[in-house]
Length: 423
Image 1 (tube, rainbow, N blue to C red):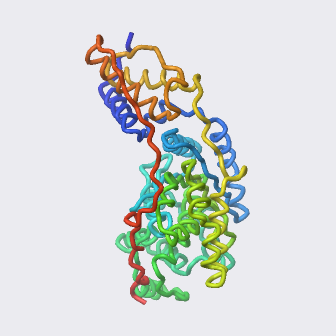
Image 2: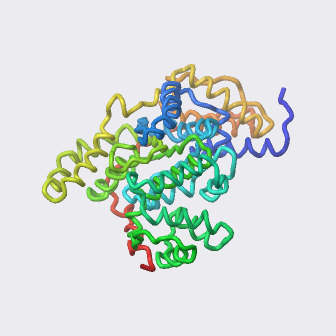
Image 3: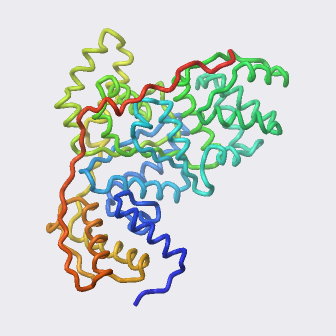
């Protein structure tokens, strides 16, 4: 017998079913289904527990990668890890690597991370983080000390804008422009100097900066804001990293460099308080390191040209090379997992449509490995039976593999690199 649920809950369940049908589960569906990847979840929880201690030592906890076949639930798992992060009091950003958010463009990656920023107790976004700052609190004093510490080498623009935000908090238009700058917009350096002069503060060595050069300083600053606002840290989840394989060699080099920084592999560019976890298909490393021979070609291109940049790129490639400490593999679903998932999806479908599907679940070996295929087959079958109980569906499925051939059209030019105006 079906339990009566509200129209709102029924609509939410139906949305979750449609998201599962499309292969892109929403947050409600992920919460309902949970995860059976206990080893990865345990590793993730251990990492969350270490972030604060590492941040206190001025270090970034190194991230890790999750590897799995196409359609085995990598995106679902990242949604679950976001849920776990929020429950544990962390701010969390989930970014899907794409043409619009290329891994090799640090500025666009930062913008995407800020735009997708989700908070445990608020709607989300950096302005909501700033609203939680309490001037005069111990956390705020620590933030101010860190930003001003010359050994930490924060860009003077952040020192100056934080001071102006503190002193001129009643000037709403100025405060909005400052927060927009922290989120990735440009700011007039001459205006910052003018405002500092008006409050009688010495003007540090402020200068115009290329927007790409501000990407990592912004990332470090945002992580400090998040910590000062009382959150446990910042989790950055990257989905579909395998898209890097579809780019040109030069774009792959930029992607490796960005990944090395985000994962905490570069001592000179760490972001204390940030944990990065990414997903990638099983085929990825074979394509870029064996077929394309990136680990051979890239040193030939950079050894004499720029050894320092080569070291950065190689750190990213080393991070992506499968290794026991930096990689975790999705466990393929066995029959018990398939049946548990079937029961959960069946219950969600019943809530969505007010009709309970048959209880029989196929054995795991009777269908392709992909959990996505299992779920879509169940939903399609139930749709047909709900409309005509006498019908016997015969559903044909085909296994898809990701296309990792090079596609130059996926690459976009970097955002306008004019320096911050108003020098």
